[in-house]
Length: 493
Ligand code: GLU
Image (cartoon, rainbow, N blue to C red):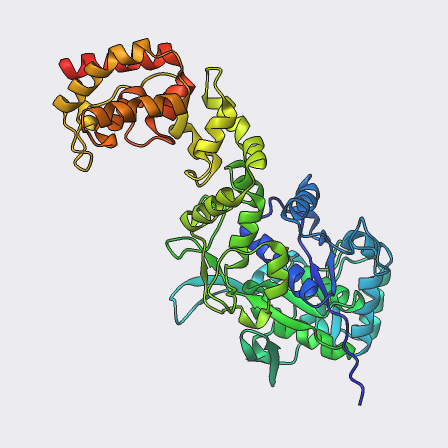
C-alpha cells in the first residue's frame, strides 16, 4: 500500500486591527515551525472582512514583524502560490463566500434572515455563568426567518431588503470535534447559535470565511488562540455540511502576565515592535515566544530559528496557560548578547552609548566592557554614565570586607599613590596595571587592597563594567588624577 502524505500547509491569518502582540506572533511562529519542520508551506492570509476594525498601517506592521522575526512566508498577497487572492476583501470580490453560503442554503444548512436591529435587540438575554458567577449578554437567534417560505424570501430579496445569511444548526444532538491538544470535545447542539455567515454589508464573517478559505487554500493545520475553541463545533458543522476534510486543529493555551491575568494591551504588555524598541533582540524574542507553551525534548532553552524548525513537534505543546515573564525574556536576551560577535554588538550598542556618553571616549572598548554585563541595551546607560562625570558617592563604599579595605586604609593607599600616578606618563591599562600591582607587591598588600580604593575613586560606583586601570585608561591621566584627588578629599572630610 502506498500512503501519500499530504504536503503540510499552514497559514497565519491576522486581522489587520493594530499591533502584532506576543500571542499573535506565537501563532505565526508555531504555524511557521509546523510547516517548516515538515518541509511544508507557510502562508499569509489577511483577514480584513471586518471593515470597522480595520486599522490603517496594520498590514505593514504584519509584513515588518514577520520579516524581522525571520518568519518568511512562502505564499501571501505579495507571493502568489496559486491559491490567491490572499486578502479576504479581494477574495470576496469574486463572490466566493456568497456562492458557498448559497450552497448551504440549498442544503438546508443555512438560511436568509431579514430581522431588523430592534427585533434582534429584543432577543438579548443576560445569563449568569454558574461556575464563575459572572453575567454576560448573549443573543441566541430564535430561527424566526428559518420559517419563511421560499416565495416570501424571494419577494424580500427582490424588494432589496437587507439580509444576512445564518447557519442553521440543529437543536438536538451533539457535535464532536477533535483538537490536537484538547482531545475530543463534544458540545450539545442546543448551545450552537445560528451564527451569521454573510453580513448585511455583503462581507463574510470571520466564522465563515476561515472555513471556506482554509479549505479552498488547502490548509492542513490550523493553529490559533483557544478563544476560538468554543466556535470550532460550528466550523466543524460547516465542514461536514460541505463534505470537506477538517484540518488538524491546534488551539493554543492562553498567555498570561505574571499575575496570571490574560496578557493584554492594558496590562502594559508589549507588541513585538514595542519589545524591539525596548532594546530586545528579535531572535531572543522569537526564541522566548517559542517556549510559551511548547517545550523541547531536551532540557534546553536557547534555540536559533533553524534549531526550532528542527526540534519543533506540536505534540509537545502544553494546554496549561503560559506565563509571559519579562525577566525571563531579559535573561534570555542577555544570553544572546553574550554570544553575539563583537562587531555586531558594537554596532547595535553604539546608539545607546552615543545617547549617554557626552565625552569622546573609545566606544569600541566600552562596548566590549558592557557586553557580558547587560541583559538589554538600555541597561548600558547606568553602567557607563559615570564616565561622563564622577557621581556623588558615599565613602562607605571604600569599605570592603573581602579586600580588607577600610576608609583609613583607602585614604593611606590613595595618598601614597598620588605622586606615583602623577609621575606616570603611560596611562594604558597594561602599564597602569603593572604599576599598581608592583606597588602592592612592594608593600606586601593584596592587589585588591590597592585596586578597590582606586576603582571606587575613579568610578564612584560599587559595580563597574571594568577594573580600575581599564577605567583609568579610558578617562585619561588628567581626569583620573582629579577623581582620585576628590576621593582623598572626601576621605579626609
Ligand atoms: N483573523 C483571526 C485573528 O486575527 C485569525 C484566527 C485564526 O487563525 O483562525 O484572530
